[in-house]
Image (cartoon, rainbow over all chains, first blue to last red; front, side, top):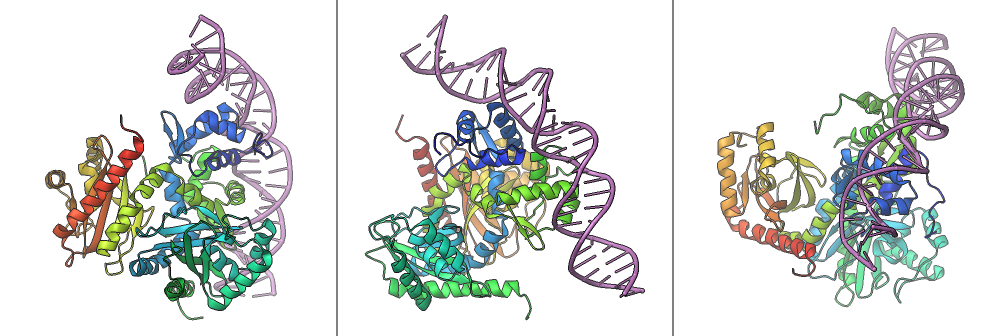
Length: 258
Length: 258
DNA sequence: GACGGTGTCCCGTTCAGTGGAACGCACGCG
DNA sequence: CGCGTGCGTTCCACTGAACGGGACACCGTC
C-alpha cells in the first residue's frame, strides 16, 4: 500500500482534485508538484492543471518551491455547521474551565474510530499535548474518546473494538473486556478519566456533551501532568461544563417549547 | 473582483464545485439543492451530481432537508500552513494574555482589505464580540486591522483607502487623512487602539506580529467593554505577546543562525 | 556537459461531464 | 378531494472539457 497507491485513483475531476488535497498530511507544510504526483498517481500535466485552478480560488497557494493548502480552505472549513455550532455553544464554557483550572482544555467530536478536536485552549502550566485543532486521535485511549464511546451509539463502540485497541503506552487499555468495564464506570460516573493511556506523563478528565436523545455528540476534557492532576477534584467542573453545553445545544434545537 | 464573481458561472467541474461550496455564507447552516442552484446558476442535475460526489468525500453532508458543509472541509482547512503555523506559535502567548486579563483575545491575519480571525478566546466578563474564527471584518475599523495596515505593505493600505473607509459606527474613522494620522501614531507606539469604531460599546488594543523583514504577518488583540477597558494599561501586555510570537516565528524560519 | 530533478506548455484524442426533460413525492390550497 | 407547486432524483444521447504523452526550459550536482 505504500509502494503503489494505484488502487483507486478516481478518474473524475473532483475525485482527483480531492485526492490531491487529501494528499497533504499533518506535517506537510508544502509539497512539490512532483511529490504530489508520486503520492496520488496523478499525471504531472493533470495535477499541474488542477492545482492551477485550485490556486485561482485560493484553495491552494503556489510558492516558489511547491504548493500548500490555502486560506480559503480554512475559511470554508470554519463554516461547517457541525463544528461551528458546537464551538460557538461551547466557547464560554471552555473559557470558564480554562479560567478556573489554567490547564489545557479540549473540545472533540467523534469521527469513525477516532476523535477530531474542535477546540483547544493551551494551558501554560501543563505538559505539551500532541493534539491539534482539526487533528485526530484514536478514541479508545483518550478521555474524550472514552466519554464519547460510553455515551455514543453501540455501533461505534463495536467498530472501535473490531478495529482493535492499539497500544500507545504501557497503560493503554487493550483488553476488550477491561475496556467494557471501564466504559460502564464512565456511564455510572458521567466522566471518563485517562491516566497515561495515550501519552506517558499525561492525564485527563472528560465528560460527554449529550443531545436531546441522550447520545454523545461531543466531549470536553481537561488535560494535565499525570502526577499533579487531581482528577476527582476536576471531574465536577468538567461535568458541569459539558452539561452546560448540552443544555445550550438543546435550547438551540428547540427555540420554543415542543 | 475578489468577492463578487457572481457574473460568470465557470464551466469547469472544479469551478462549479467551488462555486457551490462558496455559496455557503456565514449563517447558512444548510442549503437545499434548489436554493444552491438559484444562488449559483448551476443546473439542478449538475449540482445534484457534483454534491453527490462531494458527499462521498465528506466535504459536504446530505441531510434529509438539504446539504451542509462537512467535517472533512474543516479538517483540511486546519492543515493550511499559514494559519496553522501562526496558531501553534501564538497559542501559549494568547493563553498568557487570556490568563492575565480574562478578556477576549484575538489572533488575525490580513486578507485583501479584510482581516481573517485565526483564533479567539472568549472572555466571560467581556461583551459579546461578533467575530468568529475563520470570519472576516473590515481592516480599517478593527484594532488588529489597523495594526496590520500600519506595519504592512503600503499597497494594502492603498487598496483599503481605494475601497473606501465604510462607516460602521458613529466613531468609525472614515476620513483618509485622519486615518493616515492614526496609523502614524500606531507606528510610533507599536500598538493600535480602537474605541467603538466597529461596534458600539466595544474597545480593543492590538499589536502586530512582524516577520524577519519587519512586515506584519498577523496581529494580536484584547477586546472588552469600551467604558471599562484601560487600554494604556493593557497595551504593554499585548505588545509583549505580539513580540513573543514574532520571535518564535523568526526562530522557526531560521532553525540555526546565519 | 551529461545528468536527474524540477515546473511549464502544447495539442490531437476521447470519454467524463452535461443538462433538458421526465419522474415520484410531499406538501398547502381552493 | 384533485390540483398546483416545489422539491429531490434519474435517465441518456450529445459534446466540449479534461486528458496526458511528450517536448521543453530550467535548475543544481556529480
